[in-house]
Length: 267
Ligand SMILES: NC(=O)c1ccc[n+]([C@@H]2O[C@H](COP(=O)([O-])OP(=O)(O)OC[C@H]3O[C@@H](n4cnc5c(N)ncnc54)[C@H](O)[C@@H]3O)[C@@H](O)[C@H]2O)c1
Image 1 (cartoon, rainbow, N blue to C red):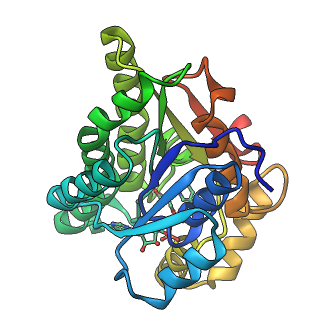
Image 2 (cartoon, protein in one colour):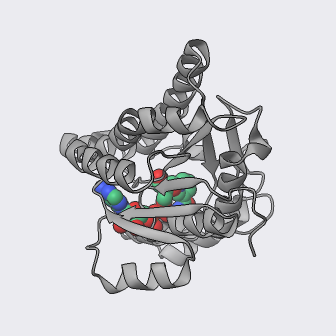
């Protein structure tokens, strides 16, 4: 049921077909936004058809968020169809665990490309359309970058992911200041989820378990146990906070880091 707080707003979410990105699309649309879901899948794939059926008021663009030309092509399409963009959610990201001595440079670079380059490219490409929308919106347009609690605190065997998500946190703050100083009407905030039940989390735990000689379920149970509220998050619990940050309800928020972690970093 739409609350209407995003009525008339145009939103783009990278990596929006699954996991947290999918839930973000659902929440933005539920609040009234016209949501452009982007992901790797072909436009005629069953996954896309299912998402468009389930999420009202949405369209889809195939967009590999690591490719600058794909971002530029998406911008041309959105400029033609909508003229501006109100909300950009840079959600694409992946994980990588392992001890520094065991990490390959190619894997490190692949992670930085997925987690950091994608945020830079989305921001750079869409800044002009976001600024245009922001000039006609009381509290500006909104960029939300998906970081992690692993962008706030370190963890053994997580150095590459820690480094990438820490970069997203500070890139967001720099942008917020750069835009505010120059009078560019775009608010920029980062969100820091704890452990969220998604395909990424399950795949990552399978790999970690294979290395450590335990089961993925044991690792997931341990995550829940170390979380103060004793459970993992559902993606929708992240999506709702992103929709808030995207809306005028967050009108005085820019450069903020919003933690949604069941109390994990409160200790
Ligand atoms: N799951 C967690 O516990 C958790 C916690 C904190 C932060 N995060 C972050 O949240 C974000 C989403 O994670 P998730 O768990 O939903 O992941 P996921 O793997 O379940 O879903 C990611 C989506 O992004 C898409 N994608 C991957 N590479 C892409 C590319 N190059 N271009 C476009 N789309 C691409 C995938 O197809 C998929 O639909 C990531 O940035 C992740 O680091 C996740």
